[in-house]
Amino acid sequence: MTNERRFRIGVLGSGKGSNFVAIADACAAGSVPAEVALVLSDVAEAGILSRARERVIPAFFLPPGKFRTKLDEETEHNYVEALQAAQVDLVVLAGFMRVLKEAFLNAFAGRIVNIHPSLLPSFPGLAAWEQALAHGVRVTGCTVHFVDAGVDSGPIIGQQTVPVLDDDTDETLLQRIHSAEHVLYPKCVAAIARGEISIRGRRVLWRSG
Ligand code: GRF
Image (cartoon, helix red, strand yellow):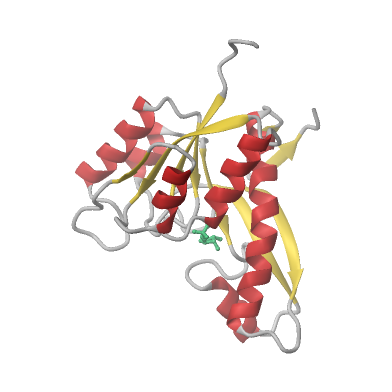
């Protein structure tokens, strides 16, 4: 037994929480050297909260305030305070459907990551898999990136491709992308927790341990 402090992750999500599950279970299995210290959601009945509680991880609904796509100032303060009180080293966005503003970004500068269901910079924004299908690309995928003030625009940490098949529907393509996400996100978070990731301008460099 060692008393070494574990790397602490705070997860924000608005939906089912399948990426949260992939990361939390990888932490529990030891393949991500970290622990999920806190889960926050802007949706009271979000699956991510119940899936966290099943794993005995502190999980709270924090009311999102008056806006639809962002947090108002007071709400943003509440999120930052909760994450700081939990002493998180990294904020992991996993299907969090609100854009984070300056106060939040500054509080966790360079320590917020997101996953997006396309190969950025293609198809940022909503329903990226539908955009990919509508455009007719033969390959799409998912991207883990640092979060900056733009929408899905920060430095790219990792990407995983998936093929688009002739008979794909929105659902089948999304399912394939999700499966890739559940491998890519824990891998990227593990590398960050191990201190193997650095940023040079827009480029993210991986140092193997
Ligand atoms: C994922 O597809 C992710 O790429 C996007 O939101 C979705 C979250 O799904 N940002 P889940 O809640 O992790 O199941």
